[in-house]
Amino acid sequence: MSTNTVDKERKVTTSRLIEMKRRGEKIAMLTAYDYSMAKLIDEAGIDVILVGDSASNVMAGNMTTLPITLDQMIYHAKSVIKGTSRALVVCDMPFGTYQGNPLEALASAVRIMKESHAEAVKIEGGSDIRESIERILSAGIPVMGHLGLTPQSINKFGTYAVRAKEEAEAQKLIEDAKMLEEIGCFAMVLEKIPATLAARVASEVSIPVIGIGAGGGVDGQVLVMHDMLGINKGFSPKFLRRYADLSSVINDAVGAYIDDVKTGDFPNATEQY
Ligand code: KIV
Image (cartoon, rainbow, N blue to C red; front, side, top):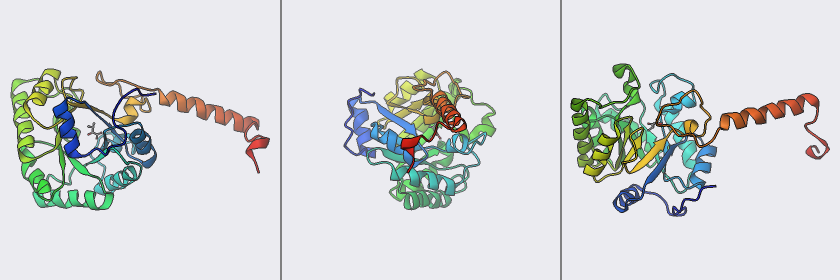
């Protein structure tokens, strides 16, 4: 059972996250893609639920995040929203729905907000997509940035290795992070970059920096729920801490059910009408 002391009643908003950073209170974020899991993690007190495009991997079984569509993200976000009452729900903008031009980006973000009722969008990239982010912000839609390892660019990177180890890439990341703050993003994710660089960014911007594989010097952490609960055991990066072994729990439970059905033990006299 969790011993955290977070206020489990008060609704989390984008401005509350900024307040949390000012107070030095860490932000806990997890992904979810469906009603039942969103309800469980919301009741446990999670601050932010990310309807990540990692749904493409863990829900749909794709190798990358690229194939998931806007309709599919809206379907997942709609289900998550129904299970959530306290956490802030942020929905990823999928690959190919914002890079073309700012009007296309706005139309995609508007569809997410209108059809799913998510409360903010997350978008991967820096200066290359500045106009798209500004256009979305101009419609009153809160935007969370995402820099460092941006999985939608895997075909450009060619690897999921740590980003921004070289000075030039680190410098560009710092500039992009400051740009995201300046144009009005309410937070950003920094994925898989050196801890010292992430801590530097967090200390130089006033908006919350949520890390994944970016060390402890940032304002909060995010993990993919299936990884941290041990549902997906095939993925074991150094930054991942597993909090449960649900694949064994499920395997044992399903094995016991199969045995009971095969032996005729289930259902028994009290489990029938
Ligand atoms: O899609 C996702 O789950 C993400 C997190 C890894 C930050 O973008």
